[in-house]
Length: 378
Image 1: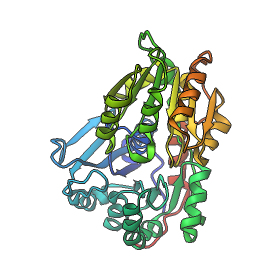
Image 2: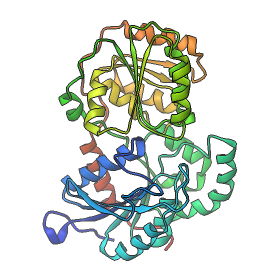
Image 3: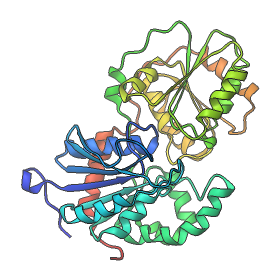
């Protein structure tokens, strides 16, 4: 299939990006899709994002436009915070499909990608952001039911785009039949925004945790570690998630002399300022498709403590800067020791690491749309 070349209004490639959630929610998938959407728009594509809104969220059913990107949000009917379903998203995709040249779905770990795969016959691309088949016994049980159906997504995909070698290896192991369709386009870093961000004026060194607050992210371990440190530093937690209430309760009991602030969801510009402010950034996640928090922290000039998992090792090997990889099972006491040590290291200058820029990611993704012939079951 030949796509429009781009450049004039009647030649603009029309791209539908499908994702379980979108900014202002904080998370790796949300950041990836937001940056890709704006990057493709800058390259001349007409971009529409199809996403879900939490049950009861007033944005459900709304359409907004941000920076040339149309965002359509559809209300979840499940009241679940882990696996949401929005039937109106499927209906909208079916109605809009004739006006789209490409549908690009994101996240294996959500319903919208499956909906996009079965709802239309348009050229289809898939970025799974794959972590494995579940991080809890309940999630693993759910995947036993979900996996046979999820194979439809891979069958429909003209290309499966992984964000790291680590993700590609894991996905090929779990779904070997589809390994030949994998292309790797790493996540990017918004170097310009990080370099332009102004650090907040603070009296104490800042330890930063940014991202979704889920059990496998182990934010609770970082909170416990702060109780073993002096009152001469502060922990700032940016983000939200299913474990937030539990982690906040833990902080109220175990923070010791350290100051701990939970900021929840904040604007991206504010996140960038905290990244420029942080002396140390910590990511103790047990599972990641890509170490985006690590890459952004290094680019912002912070020292980094990250769990020694394959995705983090991959980013650390190319990012440069001061990165300390630790056992994901590190004790709170030992983590506190590492935090104290890294805080004492002089802050790095912000730098443009070898990580791709998001504009590079958008360019490579657009080229893939044009280069890969449409294939997959219809």
